[in-house]
Image 1 (cartoon, rainbow, N blue to C red):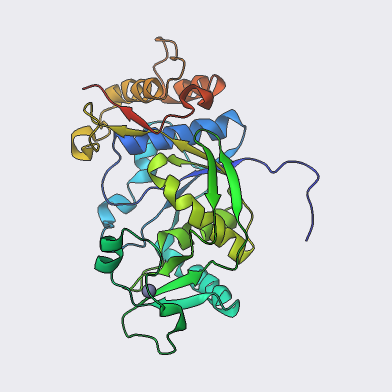
Image 2 (tube, helix red, strand yellow; image 1 turned 135 degrees about the horizontal axis):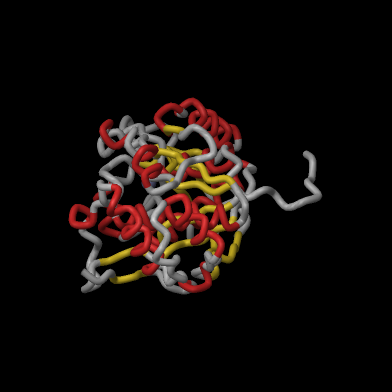
Length: 297
Ligand SMILES: [Zn+2]
């Protein structure tokens, strides 16, 4: 293994799921990840997380590239679709299996929900015979504890006695979000993950899977999640990203405002110029510690 003398070049990404059109919340995440990459002189990639077939829709799968381009955001490489990378995830499963970490868990979603527990509830680890319908989990109890500092929300810790195991392939055969994310981030050379704070709880499991698979760690910046004015979950249908050209700059201005950033001068009317200016003054410490932002109507 070679050690690099210099810091790795920044590579960031936006990784939406094609379950609906771009909306105020996903536009905010796209913009923040783009600005953070540009501010650091790095590359910004687009990855469509479409392996949850039941929820993904063809009409949205191909829409993100053109939609984001209207806002001036263009990925440095051809966007990747997770649905075309299933072989890579299977290889990762093979490696976890070779390390003796995989076991089949027959606990049902209902049982797990009733206990409010993401880890296996029973002694599925000891089952010799695989139940016909079962999720595949990675046993994390032999791993070392890991702590990283999120750039906004502080300490994130993986602890093997608390985060005992993680689903890597769901009962329905679909590769878990946690596994696909760590594989893709590593293979795409991602150094910086900028995403919504709703994904903060996932991070501990991703730290564990990086360790289990010998993958590099990344820096994290979790963004405040937009909520309705009363603090309730954002009604995405009410906040679809604008379609017309005239609405693009106002939508970008609004996102910057929600992120507590310095406004871009009012004369700026082109998305590319707007982004360039916003990247110069980009300062994530302005929203440090915020996990939610209630948006005004
Ligand atoms: Zn179980």
